[in-house]
Every structure is written in C-alpha cells, then in structure tokens.
Image (tube, rainbow, N blue to C red; front, side, top):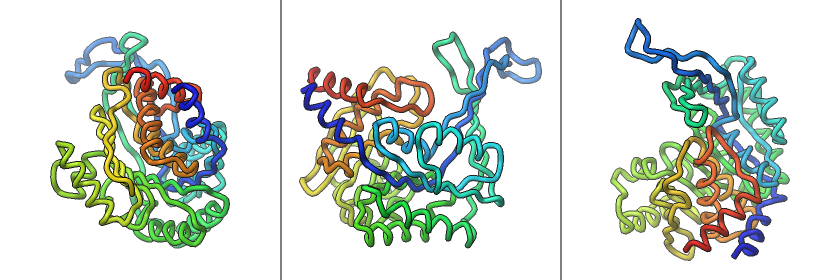
Length: 333
C-alpha cells in the first residue's frame, strides 16, 4: 500500500488552485504563567514571544502550496500593518497574492490568541480576541474581487471557496464564482461556516457536523442520520459530492456512487484542532483537480488532518508525511 499511497499523494502536486474567501492573520501572544493576579482570579503571564500565521482562507492556500501545487489567493485585507504582514507571510509560503485586494476602508481580520506556555511542550489558550469587519464589500472593491476571480479562473484546475463569514462571500460573490466557474468549465469546492444552501450549484461542498445540523435543523448522530442528510444536501444543492467531517467520528460522504463513512485517522493524539478543516478542504480540492474519486480524496484528507491536529496552530503537511500516514493507516487496518 505504501507505493499506492505515495502515488496517490504525488497526484496532488502540480495542480493550480484558485482560492477565494475571507482571510485573516492568526496572532499568538505567548507567555509563561507566573502567579494569580491580585486584581482578579486570573493568571498573570510573563510575555515570551509573538508569532503570526496566515489563517482562514489563507490556510488552505498554504496547505496547497506545501503539497506541491500552486495557490492563487483572492481576498480582501485592510491598508494596515496586519494586512502587510499577512501578505509577506503568504508570499514567503509561495502563494500568489496578486488577487489579495487592499481596501483602505476596512481593517484586516486578526484573531489574537493569548497562550500560556505551561511546560515548553503544552500551550493552553486563555482567551481569543477577534478584530475585523463583516461589512459588505463596496462597489469598487467588489469589482476588483470579481476581476481577480475572472483572471484566476482562466488557468485554474479547481476553484476553492473558503467562507469564514467576514463579508467577502456574500450572495453576489457566490453567484459570481458560480458563473465564472461554469463559463470556464472549472469545478468548485466549498468549505462553508453557516448556511450551506447558499452554495447551490457548487461541485463539492464540505461541512462540519454542527453546520450541517444547523442547515437541516436536526441532529446527525447515527449513520442512518448521515445517510439521509448527505442525500438531502446533495439533492438540495445540486452538488456532485457532499462531505461532512465529524471530528473523532470520521468523515461521511456521498457522491454519484453512493454513501461512504470513513474512520478518523487520529482519534487520540489531538494537540490543537485549529485549521484541520482547512487542511481537509485543501486536500479535497487537490483531489478534484487530480481526478481522484471523492472517497480517495477523503481518505487522504483525513490522514492529513490527523497529522496537523498534532501540531500547534494552523499547520501544513508535506507530501512525504502524508504518504507515510496513509500507508500506516492502511497497514493498521
């Protein structure tokens, strides 16, 4: 199986992916807990260091680049230090940021996490502070975003849409992507937080369980629930494939071949689940671009997620790591 795993993973490289969505800068302020404050029952942290990582739609772009494919990112940042820092981090990761539009009327979305470095191996999140705008795009910025989507779709193998509900992916932009993709003959893959029904006509739709439950307005606990849910969502969205990620319970999916349920790749060694969904959608998009079956892509995606949850913050996986993980998972079954 190791040879088969390596061959499958190798097919993810050399693809061209247009990533459209909400971007942000993930900021980590890391300190060592010293004592309890006299002002309130909270720990006092002695500042150690600051680190930043591209987040939201920028994270699947990083995963795509790490797996040997080309990512072109379309999004909106503010004319501020955080936007400039995010652009530099993305360029350093080999991501095309020509479509990252600067809007002086907005602030760049930043998620600041205050972390306690407990023993140099384990960090505990104390609080998260979000800054940013969810306002609709104005006419000039929207036109520039549309133009960037149209340019990027010309040579893309697939369009990946990452919806973090920060204003870029409103109904008009969603319709623009659908129209551009159909005209260019490009498949569309979407990772949505919130109402999935906005993405009718997209090729593959991924959701986590809570968002799928919210869309369908019922709980999804048993396999029978997931069988019915994936069928209903596929019909309602007119999608070729539906993928529902279930954390430690694995992945449920439905395509033209029917329903499948896959186990999680890593159920116990979870250090930080931040960004795992971004890794999943990146691998699924590359699988679509490579012509893999959705079950094959989901198997690779689950293995990739099982790697990144062992790491701190938004993380990426190399082709060698992914091939080894898939081979190990198979040999253990």
